[in-house]
Amino acid sequence: MPAKDLYHDAVKAALIKDGWLILADPYRIQYKDIDLYADLAAERPIAAEREGQKIVVEIKSFVGRSPMADFHNAVGQYAVYRSLIQETEPAYQLYLALDDITYESFFTREGLTFIVRTTQLFLLVVNIDQQEIVRWIN
Image 1 (tube, rainbow, N blue to C red):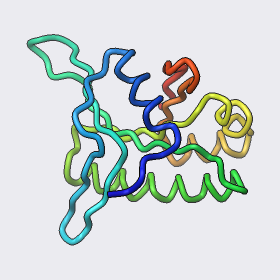
Image 2 (image 1 turned 30 degrees about the vertical axis):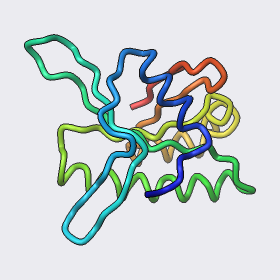
Image 3 (image 1 turned 90 degrees about the vertical axis):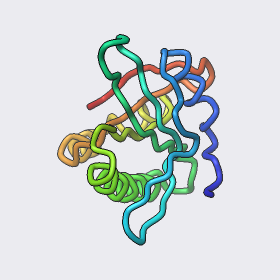
Image 4 (image 1 turned 45 degrees about the vertical axis):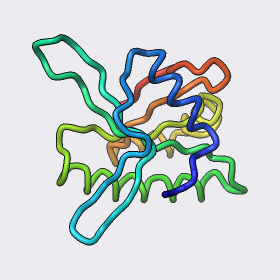
């Protein structure tokens, strides 16, 4: 199993605080001869008679030497996970979780907002210190 990301526990706590039930930590993605792990799977119960929203969350800290290299890796991993999840568990929506400081200082750049929008990258922005969800972007 892969090592937990630096912000793993804070993102998990933020989801729980926001009313999400953690279904898997980590979430196993299996397809034919591929076996991968995303960080979390969660469900937000809506009502007893309806099925709730289900998400898979891949957490990234963007603490490498190059934020753009981290971004390239994250987008590539996101694309692979999204394809496999759509094929194996289409009820789940994939989100890339990141801290609010990285979002504000890096992801709000015009070129990156274009890439996020055109690649349909869904983001979960978390305040790590307060362990709270700041925004959902989809």
